[in-house]
Image (cartoon, rainbow over all chains, first blue to last red; front, top):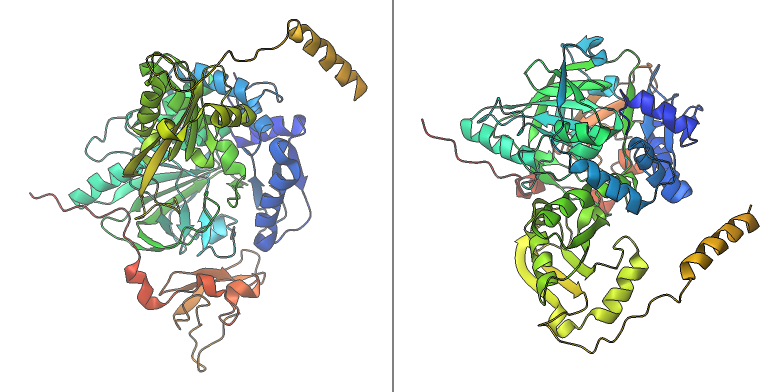
Length: 476
Length: 85
């Protein structure tokens, strides 16, 4: 396990591990930064590096980094594992740490980002190298910030303090639009503030050490603190500092924006190229006014290219979506072996489980839909036997191909809630959901004519080790 | 670049074509670019972007808006009733 004090320290490790590309030539805000952010992921595939720019047109000293979480090696290094740790190894290690929850917060008196403070005439376009990600976007977005809020009805409860990642459209020098869809925790805080007729204070931390972004983008329970989750994932108390309004914010950020969601106001926001691979359309969303910006001297800005999957977001939200769901399910059903929710933020969930008795796998599938994650995602749930690796899609497709009889193995539950960004939902935010039971029926479910399943010939393991070594030599 | 409408100082918004766009700010390194925004539909653009983002004639049909569309967009999240007392 390893804790990084800030993003720069993590970039040093990525550099040493050849997982960072530095671009020193002059680049335009549009279209260069988005194009490079898109291309790094296409060029590098599942092992793509982060990409850093230090010569951005129009700024004296701007630095931008993208794709920090955008590959399996980068995520493994973030967890302090070997860069070649497999997805499955990372998943089980993440689960092991997650189960240590809660860790502790390390309250500190001051932070490096307090070096420079702007309280008058805030101009975000001057302070941040903002750029358009996709042509049809309605504006310039901050899309990888950690947004902190508290419940105005329970202000001193640090466990319901929320750290979330929501898209922010920069509409004016100090005016932002925010997307707090109803399935997000901040929407609860906003609802309470608006019922009181009060603005909701928020703090927006940009360019953080890597673990808090993973927690901010993770579906954990409403009363679980993201900081206490970050602490167990990094193996040490998570350092925080108070904002001027009393919110706990990360110590290791580059920028901190402080402001308020304006009570009972909505205005047009979007479109924005979103995670399902299409533009979101426009909605009337809440508005934030920024009153104060603090930042490190010579700050580093972090952004995430979002577009047609797979992008950095798909990597960043893979293990942190799967692991909480796994732990929640396993608490109730110890037979659960592993959960893969890495596709499109978990619109599809694949669960491998052993069967307690006939019908059991379908109960596991139904429970997926009523988890915190399931309320907004889990449109299609595939259940496979415990000896099928849910991260190996070839194995999953074999199970679906050979174990499913649609007559009794497909369940459709009508009109459940789903993220409003699901383009197939009708009306927006409502969708039928489906369970595909691809397990082998066990008594008293005696459907089908399943015979003895094939295994490997004797000594296959011995030959696999021997041949793997020979292949490695052959390809040196 | 959007053009002044009928010689007035107002700029046309590439997206909703309202003559209500204005200069938002300039680049920190002077003279590199200018940011504009529309007071009607809140679209923002930079002078150095491709014409599809800056020129009302070339702005893609798929992303255009009419000012009267704005009130029709869904309100998310819904605004709760004020608590009494």
